[in-house]
Amino acid sequence: MHSILQESPRKRAGHSRAQTPALLKGLIFGPTGRAMTPAHTRKGGKLYRYYMAADALRGEGEACPVRRIAAGEIERAVVDQLRVLLRSPEIIVATSRSARGSTAGVTEAEVREALAQFDFLWDELFPAEQARILQLLVERVDLGLDGADIRLRMEGLTSLLNDLGSTRPAAKRAA
Image (tube, rainbow, N blue to C red):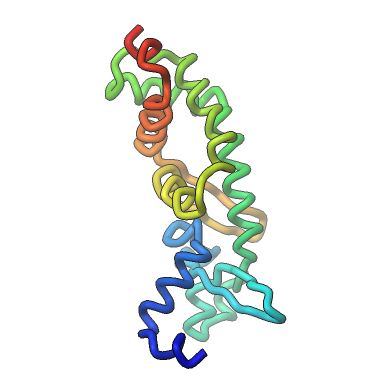
């Protein structure tokens, strides 16, 4: 314990964040429009992660109707919604149109196939990689009393498509 405390608080905080990345850090906002901050606590040796309203952190908790939300719960909901959105015809068509400008010869079928890989790849990624992809794909998550509104970044989808497309066999890319 003493050796842990000798390390600077900034370094210790960095280690904690690396072990428990907040996937929605900088992306999630409460009903009042203010950012929500990742936080965690330990009870009985178990880690509890959550996002806390900035209003509540500043002692203005009464102003925000959603003081905190379980991190795992909202992160899972956002990823599940992202999976649904990436399979939707509207997103596939929009991504295909956007990708045509940066990736010559890409077809709508290739876009559909690449975005379908997201489901498989997501579960294979390290948490830091998952956080990077969410930062790439999600512009903002607004919490309300009746759910969450997720805004996507189209340029992020094109970038993800290019990353996924780089895993295609060379012969198929050249065709």
